[in-house]
Length: 256
Image (cartoon, rainbow, N blue to C red; front, side, top):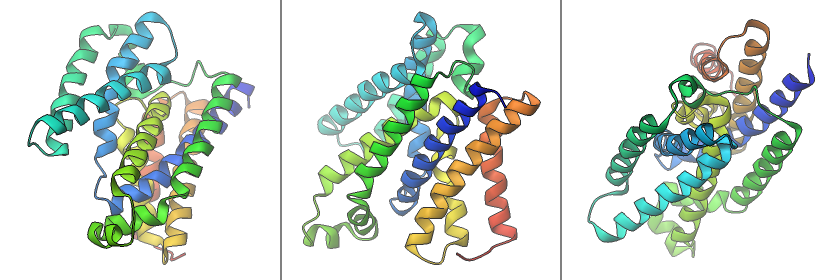
């Protein structure tokens, strides 16, 4: 196994684990498709990164920040729901991406690419993933309560607006990291499928969280190994591995 693949496995495992962790909250908050919308928002940033040869995750997070700011502004100015505004903005983002995206770089933007991973990139991804985990862990129980009953959470002194903003920021950063390994089209699956797998086989909230983390990390590791040995596109292989784990949880359920 080459050093490059080892770095990719570490990076993928870290991103997959934190994506699974944050995804476990997306199901309770009924936001399973939000990752896909945010993934589309990253595409113009990825296109510019490929066009001007800088880091795709940096391009993704910059355009995500821009897109989320626009959505927030429009929410203040209109009576439309967040989901409707997100659909409008990510449709515009997708069109803009294909306007600027170099034809030969389309696969990288849509399906992911780990060929340019470096030690610096890997260390940064691991550190950011740990920070995201710590940030959400501090408010995880409050987010779960808010997902079950916002009124009950509010009556217990939970700052719903602050928590939702923090969670959205963490999801956005995770999506920006995930674009590197699965591309802009499949980030929703990176977040949602491990949580669905965990929900099928978990008997408690604690096991649900840890199985989500493990399923996310394992699917990334398996997908990267398939890429390394067979040369198949890394993004689709990660998602296929994740879906296979989900199907196993459906047809061979084992309670944890």
